Length: 97
Picture 1 (cartoon, helix red, strand yellow):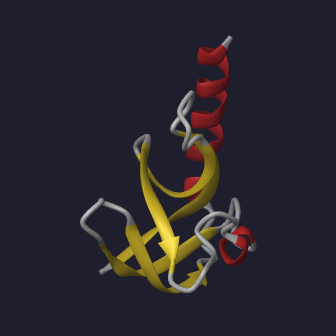
Picture 2 (cartoon, rainbow, N blue to C red):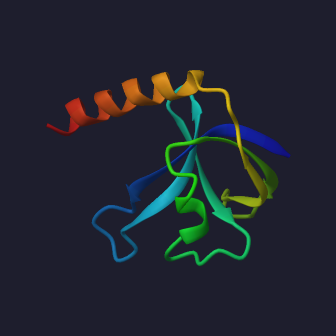
Picture 3 (cartoon, rainbow, N blue to C red):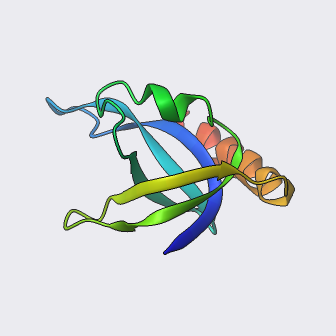
């Protein structure tokens, strides 16, 4: 299965013992997909950090926990969705105040 979007890191599981900054794929329309790259450290996600805020094309499949397990990843040169993500971040910042 192939997905396209922007890799972002955001705070998840707020106010719990598992609170962490985790990687997601922003696919548009305010929808985020939790992602994991095969062979990456799930607590550090160092291999995915190289793609932070970049448009990517990923291939893989969902596991039983609805996390998309990435088998291959490549940067996508298309830039249009980033504008929508920037607007989404502005909305989130306004709502947090």
